[in-house]
Length: 286
Ligand code: ADP
Ligand code: MG
Image 1 (cartoon, rainbow, N blue to C red):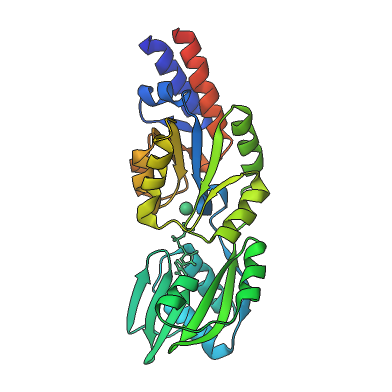
Image 2: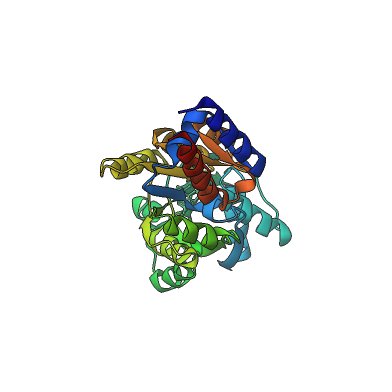
C-alpha cells in the first residue's frame, strides 16, 4: 500500500465532504458487506412536526408542559406545536425520561405520561385506541399516547420527512452489492412505512438505545463487515463497534467523535461515494 495514494484519496474525499479520520478507514471502506442506518436524523431530516392531536386543551397543556423537560426531537415538535397554539406551559415538579418508552412528569400535582404502548402497559393505563394508533403508524408517523393520573386522555402523532436523496443513496448502495438495514427505537409499523419510502427491506425496530451496538455485533457475527450510520448520542456505541462508523455531520458531537468518517451536511449520497473512493484507492495500491 502506498501512503501517497491513500493521502490523495482522503484528500479528494475531504473536498467532496467525506471526512475520513485516517487513511486506514478509507482502505477498509471497500470491504463492507452491510450498512446499518439509524432512522431519525439519518434517513429522515430529524425535524419532526406534530400532524395529529386528539385531546382537550387541558391535555395539550399538560402534554406540552411535560415535554418541555425532554430534549428528544419528538418533544421539541410537541412544544413547538403547543407554542403555536398559544398554550400556557407550566413548570414540571418532577420529570423522568424512560428510555425507549417516553416520559413521566408531575405537573400541577398530576402524573402525566407520554409515550408508547409499553409505557402505558407498565403503568397499568388502560388504552383502547389500537385502530387509531395503527392508522397513524401505517402512515409512517410516530404516535404517542397521553395519560393523566392513570387515565388515557389522547394521542399525539409526529412525522418526520425522509431526506430528498435517501432513496437514491440506498439504491446506489444496493447496486454496489451492500445489504442495507434500518435500525430504530421507533415501533415496527412506523419504521416499515419509512423504510418502504426509501427502498429499505430490512428493519430492526423497537431497539433500546443501549441495544443498538449489540445489533451491529449480531450482523458482524454473520461474518460480515458492517458500517453503522448515525447522528445521535444513542448511536455512539454502535458507531464505535462497527467496522466503519459513519457520522452525520449535522448530528451530535458525541456521534462524530465515535465515528471513523463524517459526511458533511448529512448528505447520504456521500456514502456510496465513499465506497467508490475506497475502491479506487485500493485499485491504485494493488
Ligand atoms: P429513536 O431511535 O427513533 O430516536 P427512541 O429510542 O429515542 O427512538 O424512542 C423510542 C420511542 O420512545 C419513541 O418512538 C416514542 O414512542 C418514545 N419516546 C421517546 N422519547 C419520548 C418523548 N420525549 N415523549 C414521548 N415519547 C417518547
Ligand atoms: Mg437518530
